[in-house]
Amino acid sequence: MLPTIPHNRTVDWIYNAYVTLFFLYLALPLTVVAVFAFNDSQFPALPWQGFTWNWFFGDERPMIGVFHERPILRAIGTSIFVGACVSTLSVAVATTNAFLFNRHDFPGKSILYFLMLLPLVIPGIVLGISILVFSSTMANAAWDGMQWEIEALRPGVLLVVLGQFSFIATMATLVVSARLKGFDQTLEEAAMNLGASRLTAVRTITLPYLLPALLGAFIVAFLMSFENFNTTLMLVGSDAPLTIAMFDRLKEGSTPLLNAVSLLLMVGSSVLALIMIALQRR
Image (cartoon, rainbow, N blue to C red):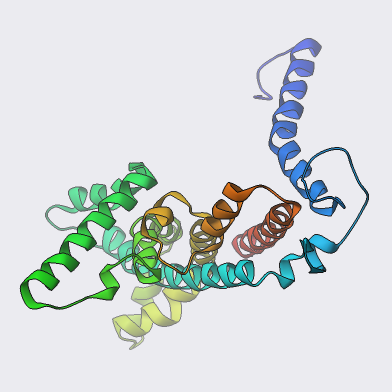
């Protein structure tokens, strides 16, 4: 509500009730998931059977914990690897994109900028199917024409990285560009007047200024990669990331093990988000 607009106590009550219900709507499902991660039962549902840590540290079936479930740990490792690769590529490309669109004018700039934003409005599953069809067509053509089997074009980790990178790089570009727009270019000009080259001025002045945005973009890209499902589902091979592994487990039947994994994801995402906020404030 705008503080400058007069309003009565009833409006205040309705507004506060709406805000409270909104946050309850967001927090209640997450709270339920977190609570049932500690339920001493094989089913994540009522009645409550008692408190247990087995879904985190248990080493005997049927109540084997997250830290002893090798397929889940392998999926987490795959997700971390994919997220690190996607984040590194996205930040590198985002930095060059930010300089390109903020510092240079060239024919077709508006069209190129539109094409860069286009993956954000394409549904993830459509994007995944398009990449899969294109890569499979190229792989089949290489095999039919030259008998070359290009595994990189088949569903697998590399294709997942490229698929996620195709739209996450756009988000990273927007984060870095927003920071670069506030930079005073006269600082670079002053450095060059003192004898520094353009590259030295950018490396010693501009990039340190962009560092909070670069780190923030890396964290945002990592979180988007880690939680991505639609695009990944179309491109995944034998090494499934965590979201796909959890989906496959859910088809077999939900257990508090998935609640425990979800709780760890919530904690990890919250920590990374707090780190990003701290970096932005700094």
